[in-house]
Image 1 (cartoon, rainbow, N blue to C red):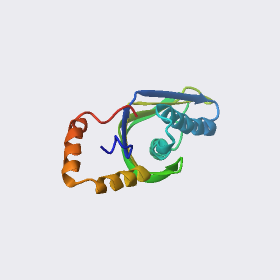
Image 2 (image 1 turned 90 degrees about the vertical axis):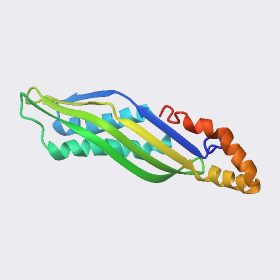
Image 3 (image 1 turned 90 degrees about the horizontal axis):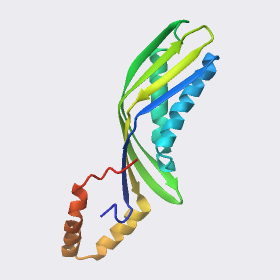
Image 4 (image 1 turned 180 degrees about the horizontal axis):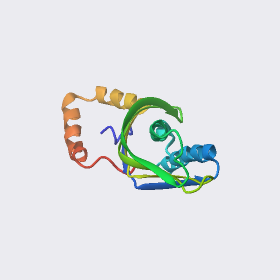
Length: 176
């Protein structure tokens, strides 16, 4: 019933991704690499309510890799690692004068690889299949729903819940 009254929105998306960033300036290539991860995540879903989750995920991947490999490999070498994703967060955002409470998690594994074929060649690759799960709670709609339910006799509330029980048992995670 919360979904029907637009109080609750649940999204899930798993997507394969492969990003390659190359350049001849090591600092610019690394900065562009972070931007490429963020742009991919924005392309998966552009809903402004989920901006915080996408940004934090991109920063996590970028910083995790940098912590292990703060320098590019020597010319003619490469370095790579698998990064486990088990990030979660909670925040409040406002969109169109509505306040939303956003709970999210990203799970899975991504592979990050740095390749340096020559002294002035920098190639960064990111691939994986991260899974995003996001729950969005609309505070205004929830308040309106609670006001309506308070007016109903308890027997009517139970009846309406039974009517929607089948919907709860279905897969509620629909395209992030």
